[in-house]
Image (cartoon, rainbow, N blue to C red; front, side, top):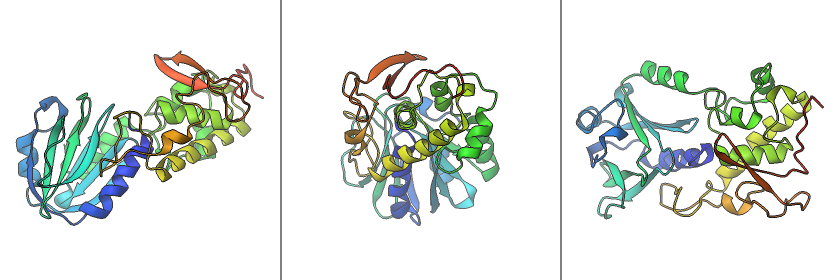
Length: 281
């Protein structure tokens, strides 16, 4: 699933290329459930002729803001990609939405598994209410040591599960949670209230580090999943320390990486470097 670095990479790729462009057409919707609060007809009517004024991100949501305070919000879910293509380019398989601009480029939403969602909000108030209801603090913009200490206070859940909870902290998914916990030397099954302030500080720093490195490397791609706006894969998969490396040597200690299931999600960690401690250290 595209996580914060992949969405941020797409936002940056679009920001320099579609801001200032005007919409000339919205078409291609063949999966109405992809539009939970709108329709192709409403999108076409509302966005026609409007200029893009900004491209932003919050958590795993990509925000395309237009004149008249309208905003198109895309959540890519498991397999969605946003591709910027020339108007004459043949449509990619599994293209479910096209937005055409006045420079003869197309923004396509391509999603083989059809889990992605596209929303239309007619005001900043609507948008902010939606984001506030679905997301906690942004793990790249808002998160720091003090905030993490405050949010973990009195929480007894497993730290890995909390990191995946988008209402707890937004933007982290399975891959980057594993990488951050490995870097911070925190076992994924640790209870949140068992972490010391030193461990919380390490974890806050690790979260920022792994997200920033993911962005610098254009995101993480496996097989035919995530692609940037130019349909190019990321490079971060070549630098992972824990995720997807079951039985391979830990880059830090050389012992094998283990894999367990937490909440039906594969979790990768080093049992030697990330010891399962029961109390505060």
